Image (cartoon, rainbow, N blue to C red; front, side, top):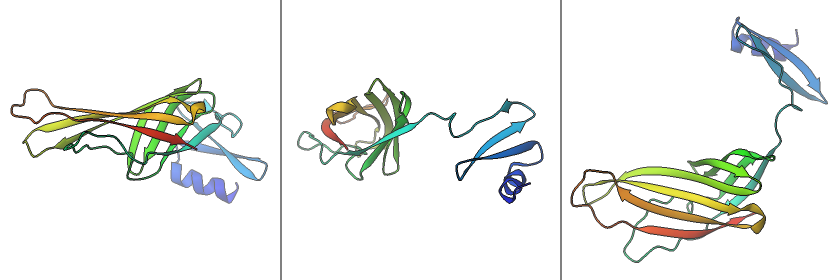
Length: 163
């Protein structure tokens, strides 16, 4: 058994057999266990596409603080080239959604405490058509239900540059 396969077999445990084949100079791995007999090679996996994302600023009404997660760090969008589930990452924040036919729709919800004593939830979305090279970021927020004395909510928008 190849040393690489022995190491993986040790990590995966005795209930799992590891098959190692070589595709070019890269090993292609497959797992065969008691519950499934599936061979996965590099050619079987969908091609993954990615794009760099950047939001330089958001437009927010005066006096509003927002819990946005897109301007603090550059972003990256990863998705199957043929379309499907997508993840956009900005720093530590991960927006989940889809890319279908070049149309992006990913979102994130956050919760935060505000000085009004209320717990708030934000909904943040990045959407648009990749070929336009500019997507739209939108932000809205609201206090969680059944709270009294909460401040007025804020909203924001921004342009997301696609590279």
